[in-house]
Length: 341
Image (tube, rainbow, N blue to C red; front, side, top):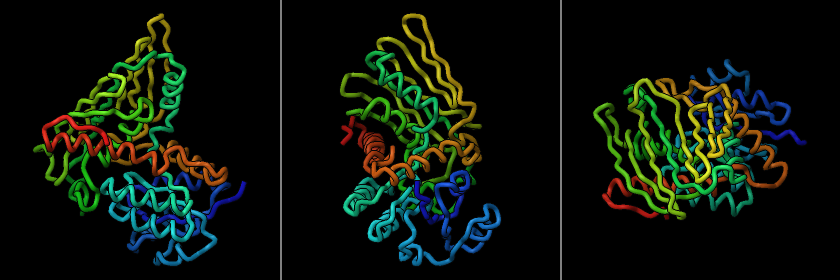
């Protein structure tokens, strides 16, 4: 198995779990360069992780020995960086969301596909062991036909979180709680249940925060087979609690809350699993979680390069959750039910 040479672009808050993952997998990957335009971030990253940093982005694209980029920059910069990487034949592992709009995201995904490079997206909830176990139960038909599918995200972010330049704005982040936090839980939901066909929602900016985009969303969803459910997402729920997802079927019900899953069946049997670790920072510190699932994302990305297959969450796959978020926000704006298109 070849060792892949990789460069990291962006050394902000999101870099910590990725740096840990890169060090864990140093038998498979060599970090050639880590770039930030900010000297203090470069110095802090180098001192903390012992990885090489650079102050110039251009050599990363021109260095033909670099196989892939890990892009951890704000969403509004993703399109240009992925386009440059595609033009120079470099694979990309990209922090969510894809971009600040689905239109821009689609152009980026198509650019990677035309160039024949892998585009993986960091939506790590799919890699939780409890998520994998639930997927297996659904695939095996243990729950029967799904009739109800719901997801809840109850995060807490203090105002200081949104006081950071650009955070929670349409120009830099593309949206609020759905695109920045809820995207993980929604992506897991549709990876297990498929795309809903119609949604109805309310989305507001509450008195809890001073910000441009939404911090509280309540929605209803309907699937092609008639199953219905709810979506709830907020960053107003002090002090924050683990996200949850529930699947109700004709043969049983399964629920994931944080690191635990319980599945109970009509025949009286049940399955319980506890991962022992949470997959996201629900409270004031958004990075208060272990890096296990980020490591799994990176490992899957390296596997895809090696095997010539697609990552588990490719750019094309990640477009699905963007379409659902678009429909929820569109419904909140129009006051009507909206199709997922």
